[in-house]
Length: 461
Image (cartoon, rainbow, N blue to C red; front, side, top):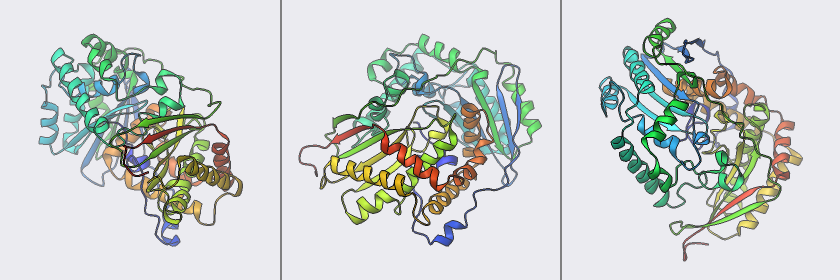
């Protein structure tokens, strides 16, 4: 299911070691030489990126479509994720499970994921298998096997996934499923991207065909190839396999923006499986596309407040006052995916605690830390620590050709500039103490959304 972009955020919930001495994190550079990104656009509108790196004999291939939860029709919640599953059920020239067999037989790995604004499909293989990977991706772009049997089968698979990951798990889907529904009002932003069972079960083959026709056109996608490749070969193979796919106009996307909350909103959810109370707070973050530098200042604030054991909320609430068992801050739906989202985006604070202090008391402590950061700024060494942690996680992420190809295609889709991926550490590092303080002050002034998890009777409180 959704949620990665490791090259940007080191998996879904970044967790960096913050116990190292100051000299070690100051040694992490924010900048390195950026690779050359070569690009072409096919006649049908498919954008193709080639990023050579011959340090290992591997190639990462990603096809990222400009479609996600926000694109789902009303009454069809969960459809973007369901269609991702259908794309693995075979295509015009590839039988069911044959995609899996061919990639694995070539020594490769593959997967896919769905996010708010993107759906991605990707492989990493020995570079000699590049032709195979592009043929497989082109075949399912052109003609996935959308049949009654495959649809019914994948509805059952998705429902089982929801049961395992949400309904039968303590805090299942918390907070990404429930917080947007409280923080936002419009259907694209507020609905459950995993899907309602009745909506999934009512989905038809006609729905799937319309969804594919609307969003899986070449002009609505980016193909990125990173690793041991020759750009001319990449473009020739892309033309050979993707070029014959019929062109159509790319759909419109958004705008999804909403006004900020006029007053605080709260919701309490009973969770009979939860062992202790929890809550999530949602604030509005600046537009990651139209105001990226302000957005990154809020990302720095999230790291200062709740990323790693040296962060302010963890030091105060976990290590000093022993009031919570976990607290973290992040931006986005899944936490850290915000740079490949369109506006609006949430700044999230997520707290689990044994009930020694009330939710209100803990919220007051969060308010105090926001106001302190907004009024007094960073402590000596604080900015250096979080900037070095970001740079370290970033460079580790882009070492993987698969993650690199996904990230490049995702940035090209959302921002129109894959190059922005390699500019992120420097732009993150350029956030000033005043910009950090302004971001915290902005959060402190906002009305917020608070979702509270009420544990089973008899659980710790």
